[in-house]
Length: 202
Picture 1 (cartoon, rainbow, N blue to C red):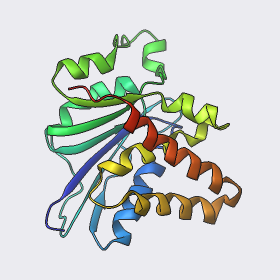
Picture 2 (cartoon, rainbow, N blue to C red; picture 1 turned 120 degrees about the vertical axis):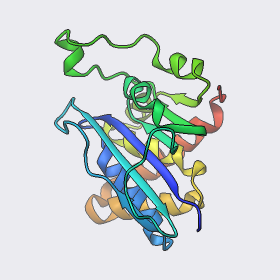
Picture 3 (cartoon, rainbow, N blue to C red; picture 1 turned 60 degrees about the vertical axis):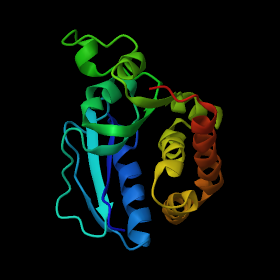
């Protein structure tokens, strides 16, 4: 427990970025880690950019992750993955949902949407797992399951067993929406399978 793990979660409003970060934090806390996380950075309304930083270890003094320090980038949207890719450390890993959500600033013509963000990240030499978590969630009958798909995808890249994070997910939904427990269990495993079956490119 001497090493600090740094995780940056990003996406747009309505995707469950903050919920996912809270569940990751709860999983780490359950194992006795010291945990620090940031609040929303940016605009959290639907369609606005949302980021959250999470750090855990034996002793963590600050929630802030500097450029080049993130062990794991969990990106719910591919353009946001590219935007925050500079935060990954050498050897860090990006998990990218390729389901595209065009933000309002693009629709308003203020900024262009990048062409093939995942390819651009790989051209930078980054290790990227890219898969369509949105389509996986829709296939399971509920687009809101996308954040659980992303959590499942991250579970085998954390310094503790995947079952710890899975249990934190199920505890969260078991307390609030018990009828969604089975669906979230299935979404979690679907995320794990998506990463296992997706060739790593760097």
